[in-house]
Image (cartoon, rainbow, N blue to C red):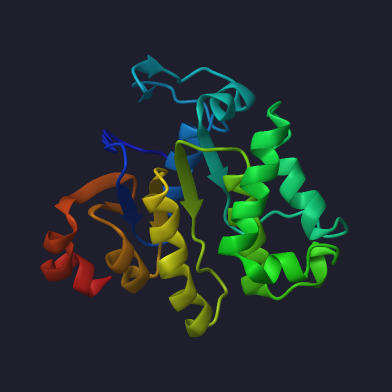
Length: 216
């Protein structure tokens, strides 16, 4: 997806959402931020450092963690193994153990299924594993790409406190969503994209009354 003149600003400690139809360029932006797609022009800055051109591994080490669309778990591995892979770049064993304990407090179902193959979980449980795996990498900025995709309305409702709790622990969140109801419930600021361009941006209250969002 080609992007034209897109400029985003994500303040530390906030939840920012990007909304738009398929093909608007939302996922491309996340891939650019995480180093999976190279940009031909422009710059990406994070915590005072320019990061476009860095490898995905180095970007993760800086604190940007991408939870991709479609979960992308290792289905034959256990829930526990998937979570441990999220911490594969970390060396602080005590910190990893503490974070794992916190994950199980936030996601008690995952503790119950820790030895179960990830591929045998429900869609909602797999999404929990994907988010939890991302948290195990100790992110400063968490990129969530369509976390509600394929989930039941009940599971979508469960995502609201999950995302809010993640943010309350000090993690900044950039949420890409087609489910505008979910996005409006968790974000403080938003960007609306159409065909690679930002067509609306600002405080989330602006989005709640905007015609372009109502049409979407």
